[in-house]
Image (cartoon, rainbow, N blue to C red):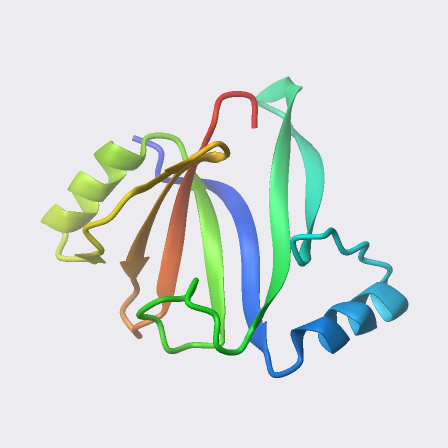
Length: 128
């Protein structure tokens, strides 16, 4: 069973998210979308006809999106079979949050690593 197939996104908190987004746009040329980040589109060697996406986004420091995680960042990993992976992680003693979010971009779940970092797992929707 494949576990992680790539990085789906990098999210981090900022005291002044708007100013930090502008800094990244000005100095590193990252175009910021209305939703507060950028989607880097790429091709996968195993699926050259499809597009992959890695999301980069800055959140306000009080964002509820990081939920029970107390760290200023969260990494999202792409996975192929979320249900199977979560079941396997549970048998290995990994802390897995009970909820799974179903959205147009795919399915999302959250786990915690050994140091308490909240990790987001993403099973992309077909074609992503």
